[in-house]
Length: 319
Ligand SMILES: Nc1ncnc2c1ncn2[C@@H]1O[C@H](COP(=O)(O)OP(=O)(O)OP(=O)(O)O)[C@@H](O)[C@H]1O
Ligand SMILES: [Mg+2]
Image (cartoon, rainbow, N blue to C red; front, side, top):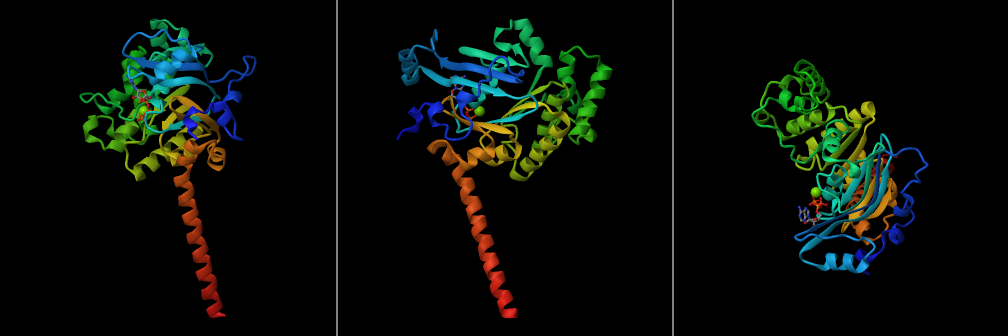
């Protein structure tokens, strides 16, 4: 069966389904609410009517357009680390960018801490981006001719914070990520892992309640990556931010995520706790993500069993 054609609501297995995600308006305010979000990239102007199935089908089939995000609705709780996982091209970056309208959604509503981002005018949006949400990208793009501390303080400059205060806060943020000694260096003097830490300090310093992270650790080698994950877990214990985190990596998702959503061809196919999804993948696509990890665990179990057997045999000989 071609699972790509399945309705995600039908395919979400026994874990929490997409249909159950949208909280009624009367419930406690969610940190991030996404409702019926769509993004169609197209070389020509498209007047998207999401109810028009024929139009949607033709957009999906056309070479001139890509339906990158397709009818995504989900809620993220305050203080939650919410992971978006999916194969390359499944729409993760488009989705996370739509949250701040770095990519303009074609349809739908995004509310962050109760504020309707999709209804904001340009000025409101700029203000909102400066104060309410910080974003960390895979390649952070530090300003090469500015010192590490100036890079970190840059967001505060945009907020109009006086120089003395912003440098003090930048140093504080650098301390949090263990880089206080590097404040006066240029970014080029730092390793990849350290530069990514600067990126994180830069996101932390604005003290926004929401943090968006698009594969922030993907460019790092495995050991450093693990260190950075541990560091994020440690920081989150103090910060309690709402974190929306994109990754390809199931290990990373399981280490960091309170809940995760799996994307395929622009749609969400399953939402749940990482361990639930691991135990109960909704369809073949999700199972493929989980399979490598299962193989790893099975091999480790087999090795442990072999070891136990060898030990028992050795003990018998001694007896
Ligand atoms: N600016 C753009 N114009 C046209 N198509 C785009 C644009 N950006 C992304 N796409 C297409 O939209 C789809 C989703 O891309 P997106 O970058 O969101 O996926 P992704 O899940 O983040 O992938 P990756 O894991 O490789 O980063 C892909 O088919 C991509 O080619
Ligand atoms: Mg991406």
